Length: 204
Image (cartoon, rainbow, N blue to C red; front, side, top):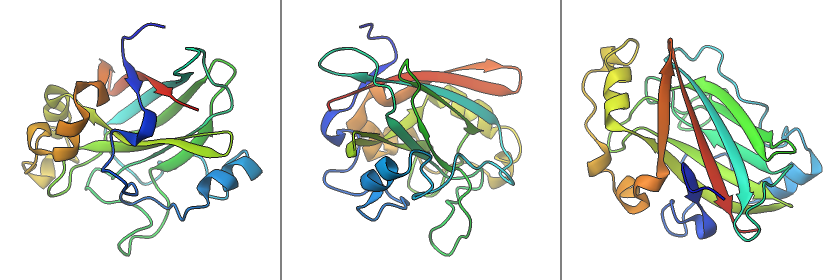
């Protein structure tokens, strides 16, 4: 198994120890709900981007078994993040379920999400929350980050630029510091859209 863009994720090592991912809809029943409803409606529907303006971002993930190095089909990959204004849906009085979604991996262990680049909020560098569920169990919860040069380029555009300068960089974010470079997404610009991929290596 190649190591380029691979992220080993046993034991939720890229999340605060023992904590629930902030702004998650989880109530302790997510894994069971996913298995009983393959489309994931028991949590929320497929990724919702409507009314969420920002720089387009396409992400492809491959879920791989850490022991066998083989892709895991039918794994549930769950993503959520803030909008361009740094706001999460469904929490803190905010309605809707925008910029949240869950999809099943295909036979090659792959899944693709089309979203926007997340905005910042005070005290955090921009990031995306991710969970992986396999066989009814949550096998990882963590966060993914961005290269500072990419973030600066995106935030120089509207609607991000209207918010002014962010107050937290990667170096100032303790979760990023704990995660290290392996949690940083490698992105390439193709026209107005940024594209990235990451291999998620999990223990089942």
